[in-house]
Every structure is written in structure tokens, then in C-alpha cells.
Length: 456
Image (cartoon, rainbow, N blue to C red; front, side):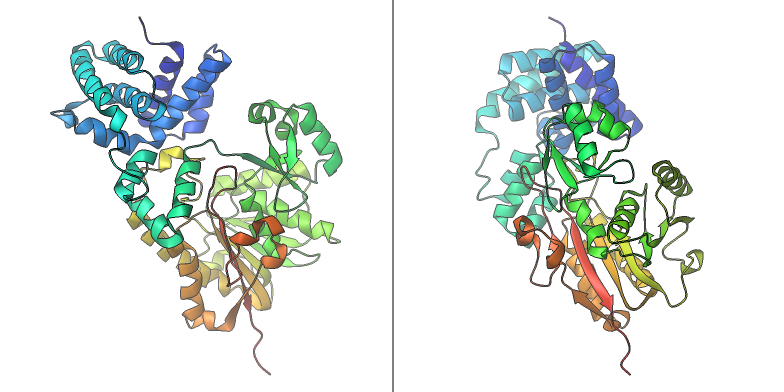
């Protein structure tokens, strides 16, 4: 019996992600498009590829404990062993089938290793009934093993947000992320855009944070349809849409979109301003020239007015064209560890460390200090990340407010722009902090700081 087509597709995907150090999503889509798969095989290949990458560290720990010389296992053999181990432990595939498919997959790439694969996988299957070998409710190590997460991450989230929140986040990270979209008013009115999305078969339903966000129930139909291809809607997580709303863009405002990327938030800022009566004057900044080039092309294609694109460094203010007196508002969507979006980027789960959190928090603090100097008195800075680590969120804001530069700022609640259904995400300080949960948005943090005018 040969390796099934779904498992073959999954193995090709795993090898490509590993060899190219690539994102799973595009690689998986390419491999799936090259194979003629039934719906069932499409789903199986997707789950295997995604699941193995999500739980890679846990799988390696358990496999290595049962291999005499784990360092001698070549990568293609390890891919096959991981996939079989994932089926045995996380999918509860019947042991006989999972072991056989794993051995055949190993035999295909390294016939001499088939005996090793048979012994290791049979031993794992014999012990699988007791997995995760303890009670996840009482032991963080067991919880990390049961959900396929790094122990440091589990301990951090549990310590900062409580065990209940941690359990929900870990569960959410092992499920496909919901597909949220935001209406692009520069292409068509909302009702017309919704009609196109419905005709695509995407089955959109309203979603927070406002009337321009939707959740699609049929993701594959949406991805293949006109609405996304022609820009009627843009892909952006629901919680990511809070930051530009917190800027409260209005006609004539001067706004710096710092770290603008491809410009989704820039577009949202200008849409809000025009909805309020007229365009703002927006400077969209990114350190990467290819991103600012893409952003410029995107704004031109959609006919978005009032946007100047600049390639520059936030930490080098001389590269930024600052209006006289300073900007009315700055949106700093800071680079971060991305710990709130791991379900969208499963390949990053095991590549991020606790040291990365510390390193990013230090960079974020420097960036916040830099952009704060560009805001006029009475203006405001909106700081956002897609991390769940307090060091990158509350820690950065609190550190800034306690600093000499932060002494001229005050925190302003954004509760007024957060819908009732999401008020539990708003802290007593008025900061927005979502953490992934099944059926909910990604993890995002948003805070608004106002620069106070000097006393007369």
C-alpha cells in the first residue's frame, strides 16, 4: 500500500516550507492546486500540513525521546515521522493505518530508515492512549504538550491573563482562523460590494468592530471570488480594524501612518476621514521601499486621495516630512512578535522565543518615543500590536508614560469606539486588548495617547 495522495501533498508542503523557510499558506495553496483532490483529501492534506507545523516542537520532543540518535535523522525522514506522530497523537487516526503510512512515507525517501520508523511509531502508538501523560488543567507542561505549544508561551499567557484565557487561546491557535474582511468604499458602495461577495458564495455576516466589517462563512468561495480579487473587500482581522478607528480620522487632519506596510490601515484611515466629510492628509511610511511601492500602486489603483508614500525609518525622524507644528495624529502599528496571530502563521509558533519578546519590547519603546515627538500639542498617538505579550503592550505604554517624554502625554480611553460585544476587551485604563479564542478575532492591542498642550 503506497502513501495516500493527501499525505503525499502534505509531505511535499512540509518539505517546501522547511527548505525555503517559507510561510505555510502560499506553499500549501500551491501544492493543493497542483493535485486533483476530493474535498475529503483536500481537508486531510490541509490539516496534516498545518497540524504538523503547529505542533512541530512537541512532536520532535516526543520522537527524539524514542530515537537513539535523533540528530542523525535526516529532514525528509523527520517530516514523515512528524506527520505520522501527529496522526497518532492529535488526530487519533487508527494506529495501524498511521504507522503503516508513516513507514511507507519514510521508505519512499530513505528505505534504510523504514525499520527505525516502524519501531519508533509503534512504540509511540502503544503509549498514545495516555497522551498527554498528565492533566492539562493542573500542569502547564502537560497543557503545552497537549496543545502543541512552547512551554514558555503557555506559562506567560497563563501568568498574565489566567489559565482560562490561556486554554481558550491555545485551543483557538489549533483551529483555522476566521476570515474577516473590511469594505473598501473606494471601489463600490457597501450594499453593492456585499452583493458581489454574496454572489461569490462567501456567505458574509456582519462582524465587529463596525458596520464595514464582515465575517465570511465560506472561506474558499471568498478567496476564489470577485469581491477580493477586484478589491471590493480587503482581508484584515476584525480586531486589527480597531487601531485605525481609534485614530478618529477627520477631514483635513494630518496623519502619519508609521509602518504602513501594504496600506490597509492607510486606506481605512482615509475612508473614515472622507465618511466624516473630506480627505485627511496622510503620510504613509515604511522602511522597505518595495512595500511603499506596493502601497503607492494600491492607492492609485483604488483612487485613494490625499496619501503621500515615504520610504524612511521611524527611528530617523529626518526621513519623515513633518508638517509645521507636528502631525494631528500618528498611528504606530509597531513591529512585534505576532503572538496574537499564530493561528494565521503556524510556522512562527516554534521560531519565537521569550528573548524575542524582550527584544521587540525594547524596539517598540524606542519607536513610540520617536513618533511621540512628531505629534502636535493636542494631537494623539495610537499604538498597536498583534501580540498578546504584556511586555509589548501595556509594558511599552506604561514605560513611556513614566518617562520624561511621556510626561507630556495622557492615556485616553478608546472604549467609545469599541462595540458593546467587545467591551470585555477594554481594560480599566481604556486600552483594547483581545486574545484569540475559538470563533473570535486575533490578539491585538490598541492604546491612544494624547499630547497635552502646555499650560499657559
